[in-house]
Image 1: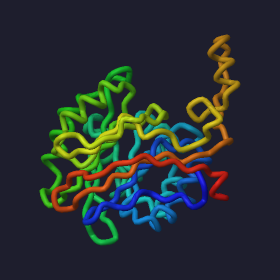
Image 2 (image 1 turned 30 degrees about the vertical axis):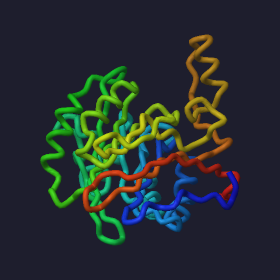
Image 3 (image 1 turned 60 degrees about the vertical axis):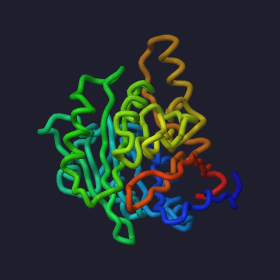
Image 4 (image 1 turned 45 degrees about the horizontal axis):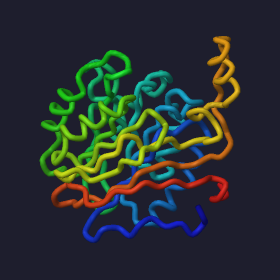
Length: 277
């Protein structure tokens, strides 16, 4: 992609929300922090980031949380690596722009949803859920999201769901379950962008997976050779975060602020080497 790359023109009367997929390590944090201003310049009203892999590929540190907030990120979602850095638990319990998966146990540190505001003052509720197929044992995400939706104030019409799940069946089922009741159901966790972005019949934006923000000369953001060696020999190795061919993967959705329903959706990807970060 060239330096003059531009997002599609925003739908009249809509807000544009950008959701950035799994941020892996320092390369991922770097490109997110360098690109938030560029996204704002292209009429993006809110930026949501899944940052569960930010700390060397596993978890999120307080310093990284502060970096993302300072760069202009509005809300942060996490996933199965949420507590790998224990220091983040206080942030999860005290800050109003970061959430745990809502189907975690009630006593788990963190909030079930958060409400952030655009510069124009429009509220956006952000919810994180975890799937159950091929994932750790966890409470029902369908029951959890029903409870959360009842708790969100009715005046908050834009309702955003990050479904952190392995199976596309989990994600499609949740998309259909919530169609017409939330603005978007976007998947994270697999680190591989899917080409199924769409507006469902009820007006909910859907995509199985946003993709990875990190080094693409890698295996899911990790250096290639250690992963290959362990796979072929069972000899344990440390899977360090890769650093080459860094890209930002995200999905944008135009939402009608009056109804909370989506009007347009699109994928985007930027290469760090072309942005001189």
